[in-house]
Image 1 (cartoon, one colour):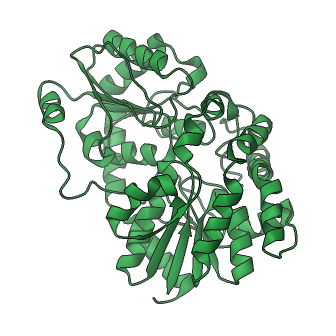
Image 2: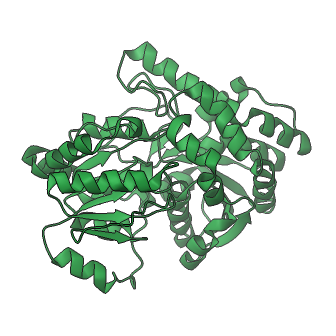
Image 3: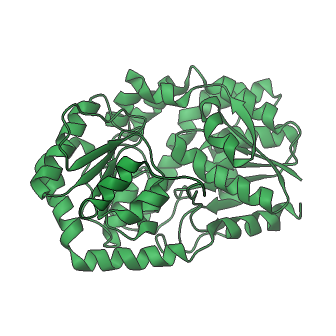
Amino acid sequence: MKITIFAAGSRGDIQPCLVLGRGLQEAGYQVCLAAPEDFADFVRPHGLDFFPLRGDVQEIMASDTGRKFMETGGSNPLNSIFAVRKMIRPVVMEMAEDAFAACRDAEAMICLGVFSAFGQAIAAALNIPLIHVEPTPLLPTKAFPAASWPIQRNWGRHHNYLSGLAMLGVVWLWYRPFVNEFRRKLGLPPSSFSRFFRVMRTAPMIGAYSPSVIPHQWPASMHVSGYLFLDAQPDWQPSPELQEFLGAGDPPVYIGFGSMAGRHPEKLATLVLEALDRSGQRGILLTGWGGLRTRLVPDSVLVIDSVPHSWLFPRTAAVIHHGGAGTTAEGLRAGVPTIIIPFVLDQPFWGARVKSLGLGPDPIPQKKLTADRLAQAITTAVSDSEMRQRAAAVGETIRGEDGVGAAVEIIRGYFGEP
């Protein structure tokens, strides 16, 4: 059986789909990963067929529009509708057309849940079954607020559920004009929010996160597999400079914001260095897509371009990041405290989740970040023994889970044997 996996977004969106694809391929399925063309060098060494989708995600995120969205676009869901449309307008139709081409000879499709509106159209046009996968909860629930809802406090069952409906409505509105144009080209009738929501609620969905982090009873169509981790390649070796730095003192604090450095990455890097100095901690600063750099770096801080999180995080005292689902998962698996500086979308949700589990200090929204607040959070993370014990216990639980194996079995149950 040939399965096409359709994924777009940042590396945190592509990576779990890559891991899932490898697991399915090892189980005997023929798998093609359709993802933006700028991820070709990331995907191909892992042995999966790769179908490049037009549209450079890194270029979009690095644009002034993209950087402005990182700073302001997620604070107001209504504003995000226009911001997202503006960001994706140059590439979204080409990307959808390429995803359709990647699925032409597929017998089944797996789609990131946030792109379900396009996945639904492709699956309907080709008459193939569809399964969603999502690293962050998407379905409305009475248990907690929706992941991208601006109020990450539990104001009761009705508020929580309505926030989930509202955010699915926002996701639908991000894509509605493009989706219906795409459906017209495929010979399909226009869709609506009610149709979109009905498929989201009834089609199988794999929640690629740990039940120890989000313990919840979902509808029958929703299956929580556990995290889909990508471990470092067996032949990967740290640079001599990194090895020397790690061995030269106490475990450092990791700081990295992926593509989320905003419009002033040097200012953010300077603030981070000041916070490390005030807390008396050594640090490793990862530049990431956002170009988080600074000219003056003390000997107590090492600046690097990239390193596998699965290798580095267990060697740190704490991790500081933007709260992307994948980076949060790696920090929790490492068993060290997490400090989240959320920028947009689901990042405040993961910050609130980490805090509620006692695995890190209060999240500090990027807009409210100061050197003093970050220094205090670092001091708490490295010195609070109970927090560190809780983080270690959750890490041990997560390391004992087999998310990939569970996800493959869920998919086998719906799609059948290879």
